[in-house]
Length: 466
Image (cartoon, rainbow, N blue to C red; front, side, top):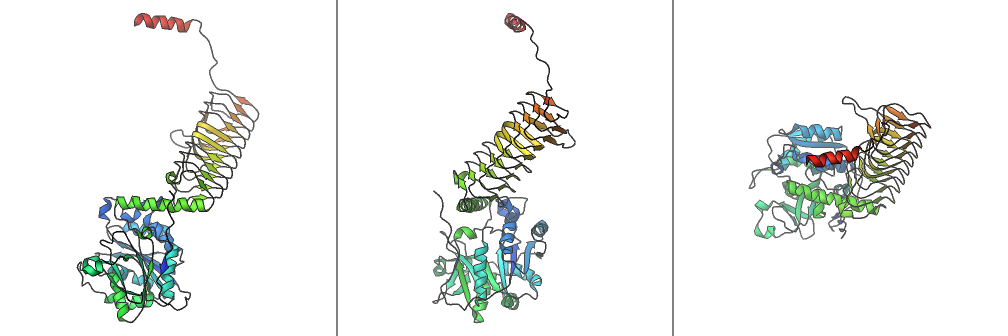
């Protein structure tokens, strides 16, 4: 059964002044060690949908067109900062060493926010599914006059999550960490995701006043709510679906986040006009682009960089990466399209065919059991079963060019660099090492001969030996 869409984040029901335009900034916390991942790769660089978790968060924040953006890393993983800069050129990198809690982490990013006025989003690089729409709702609360807007959710098991206490008007009164909560407070179902928006002026003025008087002896950013309330400022809660704020700390949670991401992508594809024969068996990458009236069969996997134009079809058990299909092109079943594969309008790639860095022209057919690499196949050409473009000589790759309307007989090897002209034929079983001119027939195989009685004599000899 198809899963239901997660509800859109909603603000609390308290009255607020009209929203005004407000600039935004984002601070992304990525200083954790991620020891539960049991990996040499930093936790936040593990991928969801073929994209690092931190890249998902940077992308969501970037949708807000932030005036400033900073990432806070630990000194144990400088590569996180380097990677973040490949995603966003002007992101600032701050280092938290040693880790002393979330407020201390944000404090390290304050120099990057100097002179900024607006809403500061505090995000987590290991919470990759938060959406731009939710972030917009949070900054909207700051625009309405709140000093702090916290993203809350209601998990089935509140467990170790901090609890969000509301006053009798529905405004946020306090955030209480589970380790510091009373039994009554632990009964609260509304929990803190950690994601929040804070008025920049208030953050600059009061962040340094947060203390470490708690069970863990750390500086909790959640205490910013108590400071705001003490100053007579308003705080509010935006509620999101628990799926959106799933934090990833282990391989199990990574798999859960991947499953939720795939559900989103499948639903989006179908809502935008694609047919998925069995949605649960189709796996998308973060950047898969799909047109309308596209048909996707069962057990299809999309790696990064795939585009399917309107009316394209991918048949079951196919794997595509770095490939494009124009309108009415089809691939599969059991097709493998590698980076650089381009199928033009009406082209057909069939079962057990591998295409790599090759253009298949309009209406051309590569129907089965074939490898086409580093090649151009002209419009309406036909490539017979078992054909191979021999593109690698052990040192370099070479190109094969097959002209319009050419016909390549089954079980042929085209040794690149080589050109088969328009309308030319290659006889089945040929090993072609020289160009075949347009309209010619190229045959390169030994002439068939018959040795009379050889088989009978062979059988007799073997039977006597046995």
